[in-house]
Image (cartoon, rainbow, N blue to C red; front, side, top):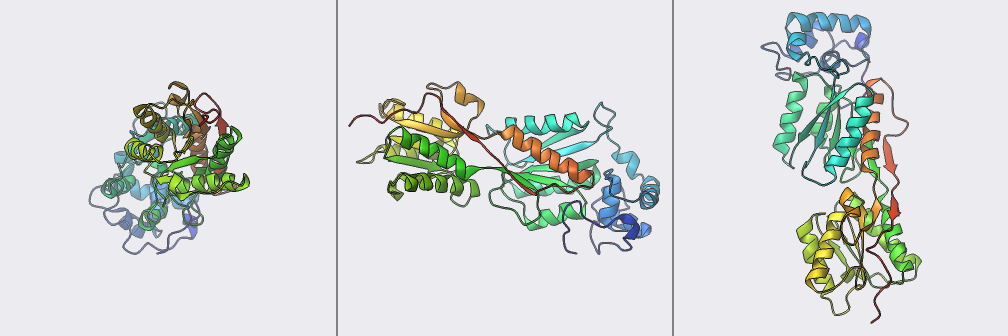
Length: 366
């Protein structure tokens, strides 16, 4: 069965069949599966899942029939949430690749605040880049009262997308590594304008040898930030030098090695545009190891404006990515889908801004 767009399955009153083979063993509700309940009710597994997860887009007659069968087989008793202040509204899953990342806290804060305002709670899960853990999370969805999901994963595999749609679970992605399939709701940052603004700032200070350390070249954000950098150079009539471009993985150690390599060139850069704030701090460290001062000998601009950017010395000039706002927007997309509405756009890019602090200044006199 082809995967439907989230929140767009047919109403249960008109759904007269079952998903062939889908959902066997997915319910976790004893010996009777959701597929068997769907067969008895004469509806699809996704309609049963919607009723189990309190989705609003099921007609009352169908809902009552399915609820009777769920009660008979003990599903509602087993999967009723704990009686807490937020339990009446249900729970939204927040699934992130890595909790240890410095931007995880900002994303979680933004999503939690948006959901709390609507009376919903949030459950946080980390996959640590392991497909097995993502599979475990998907397998657990039918056994609890999750009403939707916010996903901070590099990509949504077709099988994962199909499973979420089959379960009738609305979801939205935050900052995927590449643009998802059409119709998949997602929120990202305006990476190209950010790279443009950062490089324009350095050019405006008088820099002509500007290096860039970005993330993996296959990631949309990495490519867009480098493209913005190239556009600023072209706009200023400056040549693009591939020797000044390095791709890392948005973490400290590769960025530190790249910075050492760049600063060791016969004609080293006078400024570095780092693909994120972690890479900017790694550039600080490399400069210090070589006896260079920031910004007197080397200007550094980061990307994200994480909380530590205003506390390091010197305070970091960076492109602010409104991570909490992005997560709140993704949460609101899920809430709209829960209410049976379609978001005005399934692709939202949140504009950032350059925050000028102390790590950027004129180039040194050579």
